[in-house]
Image (tube, rainbow, N blue to C red; front, side, top):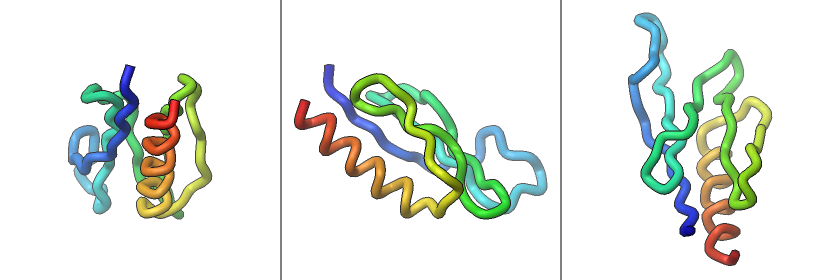
Length: 78
């Protein structure tokens, strides 16, 4: 099965006073999780090609985007 992971900006699930956007974690066209902004950065899980969930520390969205690119390269190699 192909492994295609992507992040997509969304306002779904945001509270009225939230100022930062959330990101849907999409695996093969299906929403599997959501990244949300905590006090110091985005928080959430990314699925790996082996089926596990990758938990990362609070960080900017660019760190998550780099990790998504790395996971997609790893998924193509399998």
